[in-house]
Image 1: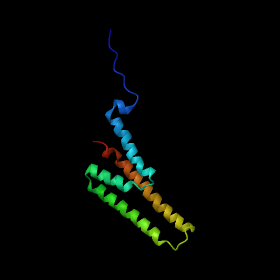
Image 2 (image 1 turned 45 degrees about the horizontal axis):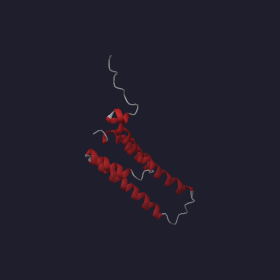
Image 3 (image 1 turned 180 degrees about the horizontal axis):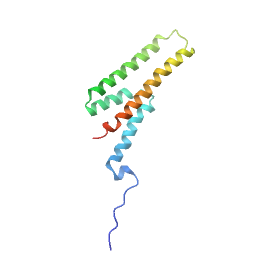
Image 4 (image 1 turned 30 degrees about the vertical axis):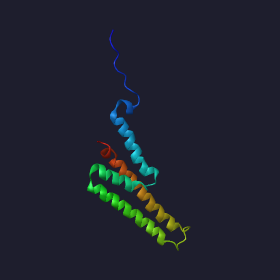
Length: 116
């Protein structure tokens, strides 16, 4: 009588040690999307720390600075009516750019951050 070969688990996190990292990396990167880009500076700072990358630290600082500029610019528009379509377009472009750009940047870093 021969022994049956070991069965592989249907769940990658049980059979493959990298499967758990894949799920963790996807959850980590999805924070950028789910928080509308607000978490991106923190995620980039984490990536800079994990990768020991000065370039990612600079990217995190630049992302923080752009957020600060957008919020400061928003505060200076106190006298402009928010119902004006131009204000809405400018705000949407800036906020969507930060959201989409940050999400793409974090998704691109995902594999490198969780490789170890």
